Image: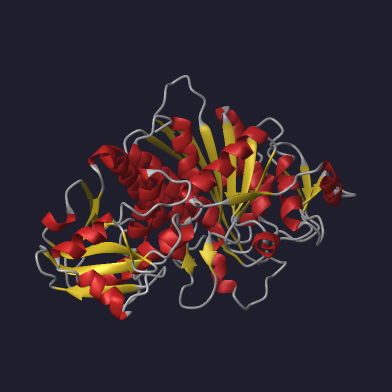
Length: 514
């Protein structure tokens, strides 16, 4: 008998952001606001805005710098109250360092630090007069994208299951000041950033939900909800019987040990011309991964609820695309299952037949992600996509190789790989290409089947991609291994990150030329 959905209460998944971002091109001293945020450089360096505020206030900023109250280093801040001749109740000085151009990370650090201070104040609004900050390699659009994404994403909180919620924050609106000539680009950046951050929030919620709530049927319900919320989205849910009838023996084998049935979720968005081939995103949706019969160690197993991070990021990316109404065609395929040990579970040594007809010897049931993805990739061929990208928390080896900062990237099409690397740079959600040489394929040889599902201890990320490459010979294909980037492990900051929604959305923005 299949288990029913847990009745534990939780709020609706997607919540509209509480904070509004507004763009204006006016002089900062003319705005009545609770807090005006101004940049100050190291060595008592003042930009044009800070100089203007300093002169109006009778040298208030110069005085605190002269006293040494603020050195202007990156991350430093100082709050000033009731400066004369200003309509702002407070002025928050933020240090931007001594470099003429900031990198992406120091810039994000400055914005996040300012936001944390603003959230702790009583004011309902704030004005950021930070347009003068120069970020290396970024124009007004690119700089504002980083700023706005940091602000909106910084508002995220996951408290659905806490009996005591945080007190509501007073801050409801942030105004970004810019020059008139750049206003259109800044507004475009805010629109894109807000959609991306909303998609990240959706992805983070899905990842952070407990596995007794977020299982394959629940994910199917979220797809249906998206279909109801956004016009033009076609949703199809394939159950375990249909999965089996399609010949997806590999996918079916992963979910057969669980009381929660597997689901193949197919979502089609047709925002482009009817004749245009779609782009395809394929997400690994293992809603909980015990390892199956090849059982994982108990320590840290709670974090295996994040093994559906690939599917969650596809959900988030699709939501951003739908919000922006991008003029492209997109198909999203999510292979969702729960990997559990039981009397019905697949065993090491089992041989299964994939939808492609290739046979797989399952040497390790904990290498299950590739088993669901291979059939989903074969299924994607029916849509004749321009390009296919699969996203998966696939290998611990990727965490060893690249840590938690960079996603692994492999594929069979150099142009597609280049486009994704570029998108990652633009979105500050970077990936790094690993080789996919033929020599690695030999590690997957099986004496009993066409292919084994593991290739031994060496080059685990690469051999996992080699496995998937056997099922993508007719596709322009790339594989993103997000095992190190989809969530932050352990401690008070544990939780889903929302990556790689920025990278994927940027890739699609580039294709749509939006």
